Image (cartoon, rainbow, N blue to C red; front, top):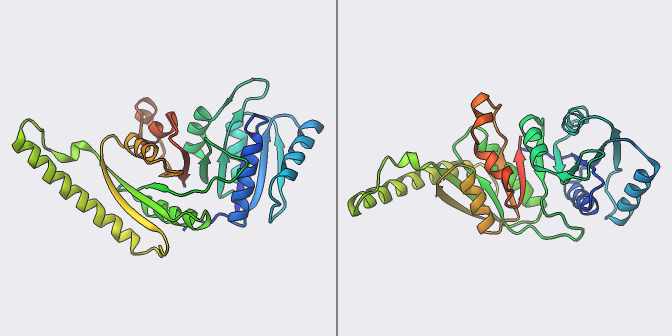
Length: 277
């Protein structure tokens, strides 16, 4: 089961820096973890004093804050720091390319989530004041890594004091093997959907038997549609506070050309997203 004892936050001196720092400090304290900050770019007295001032405004940290200053390409520096510092969780908010008045997360997130040696939390709505996490949506798709991802969702639920988890089982329309053209084929399609939903529910229930989920309301939801797109849309419609997904496999040539499930999520983040390694 995922253990979080060392968290890394990318420090970009962007308009969201204060909110990102406050969120990272709260998470570090909730997990009783050490918080490390990495700034990609030159070190200066002003940046040091600005960062120190922001940290003094945030909640006091349970463990000392460590700052790393390093010049280079953002992706390479962040990945190298994750490995060197043995980070369990990387938090990405706005990432700044030095000397460019541009803050972005999408393209950086794509590259980092493919190669990161740890789990990655993407913050799209950081806040200086704590916004309670009330609903977590987690993928329940048939995959070797899903059990670990669901277990991690329960760990986060416990530490964030969130008492509602929805496990979404995305089923491809192709699995129905029924082309709807009239009432008869519609009934056949509905029966096939019910069977597939029951099959997926049984598989997820088997995983849940290994988890102590006291005080957490768990719902299972089968969705038919494009993998990644469907769960992202569901999380947005249900106003989930956190969407938890499996990390992508090592991507081959065709994955770089055609969108895979996580690409849909990263292209339009529906909420804060945790990608579990």
